[in-house]
Amino acid sequence: MADTIKEMMSAYVAGCMDMRNLAQFVKFLEQGDYIPLDELGELQNIASLIPILLEREAPPASLQNQIFSQIPDKLVEEEPKRVKRKVNLGEIIKEELAEEKQKPEEEDVEIEIPEKVSFTSLERDTVVAEVAEKLEEEIFATKKSSPREEKNKAIIEEEKESAVEETPHPHVKIKSATPSEKEEKVIVIPPEDDKTADKKVEYEEEVFPDVMQTDSQKSLRMWQIIAGVAGAIALIFIIMYFSLKSTYNDELTELQKIVKEDKIEIEDEREFINSNLPLIEIFGLNDVVLVDLASTSEGGKTEARIIVSPGARRGVLQFLNTPKLAENESLQLWVVNKGQSYSVGVFHPTEKQKFYTLGKIPFIPFDEIEMFRITKEPKSGSEFPSGKTYLFGAIRIK
Amino acid sequence: MNYYAELNDSQLMELVKKRDKSALIELYRRYSELLFALAKKITGDENLAVVIIERVFLITWKKIDFYFKGAPNPYVWFVALTRNSAVDSARRNRGSLSSTVEYTESYENEYIIPKMKEPMDPLELKLAEKLKPKFNDSLNKLTEAQKYVLHLAYYDGYTLDEIAEKLHIPVQTVRNKVKTAVYNLRDNLLTEEE
Image (cartoon, rainbow over all chains, first blue to last red; front, top):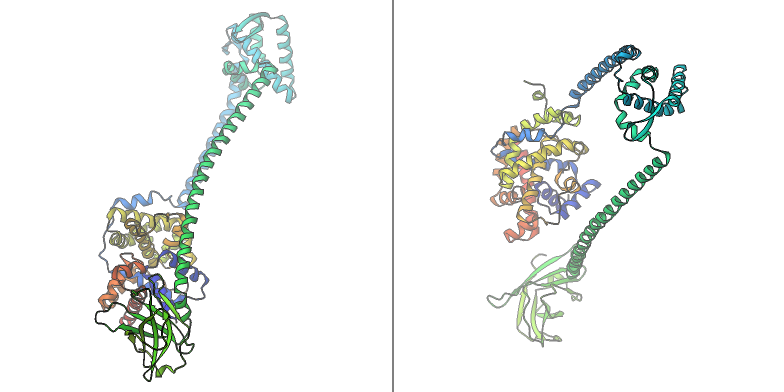
């Protein structure tokens, strides 16, 4: 297995990959082609044993409650409760229905006995009559009247005709019946369901004004409501629009910032690749040889390195500390064979450029090259070394 | 002894998947001391360690499906989840993780939740406890340099580049050191086991 894969797996299990490398590794992992998953699993197990050597320490006692209060209880425990609730509810409904059944009979009895109905005042009686009339219209509009209701209706109509006009309620003028008729009316107003009548009386103060509104008033009110709702919706849309606009502007700014940062990063990487391209290319060859060149002067800081492929006769020269040269000077690299120096190239090192391509290495068998050396020469270089040897080194690995 | 205490870690995780809160409570009972020590060791802060343990168990509850996506391994799940979460906090605190990197759901899924792939032998806390003496011997057989690099990576949460910068050595050397340390640890343990 390639060392690179082992290094990646080790860095992954030791948790020292940076975000970019980690994302790349996880991608490889998902593809499953490059990573020996059995070995990775083994290493994950090994790395996770590291903390087993730690001295244990109990977390604060409150932590358990703090965590598990955020987690709902086991569902299977909740189920019976729900069923129980349903059963209870069912029983309650049954009980209520039973009560409902009993109530009408009792109320029927009450209603049929006029003394028990608390409709003593005229005002109240006439109100009841009016409310009954309106509700009656609504009910009868959709429901076929029962004989009793028909009878009631007839009686009410009759009452209206004979009643004296009074003002029993601040909102409306209505006709009322005579006391004797009133009693009779109270008995007959409720339809067969007596509870309804009771409720009508109970809520008459609230129901009454709406009931007595004219069609035009109703229509006007309806349009007012529609206009109000439309206005509220429009307001909500306006608020949402400005809120979203602000949010999107922020997000856009954030995205622009990210794009800008990414662009800078890409540019940096491109520059890095360009400056290292000769090195990347040479490492693509499989017979790479490394030659370190040291300074001839004691304590000289400048060093250089030659990375060369004997087979391809190509190489790269790297200055580890860029030497300072005069305007009219250059450095020339030579190979020495049987005492003769052959030029490999003339260079004007700068701090920015790290690698220099060696494109014309002479055809000398590499095992016969005695050494590489670099001399200071005039700017355009020399046919033979004329300056003092500046750096030199022999092939270290053959 | 209660029902849950008799189950192994993997069985408890199966019950957690079925939304059994008591199973997770039992796992908390088993793992919390180890994980708290780990989180505290990495962050150096007791309060932060508490937050991390809370996060670990809530993630386990909410994202149990991630556990079953790969090779179910309860011990590695809890240790790696705690370690990743604690290192993330430590890196944020010392500013080595860019402040533009927000802790979001997708970030958590990508970088915090451990990825475990088949084939992988499941490890449980009980077995890890048994291996402790052998593992200790194996770790002690590493060179001081290997131990140091491993510590910087695992507990201090430094990346390869940061270790290289800290030790003034090339990144490639760090990669190699980490690899040697991890593989030697494995080989030493295998030898111990034999």
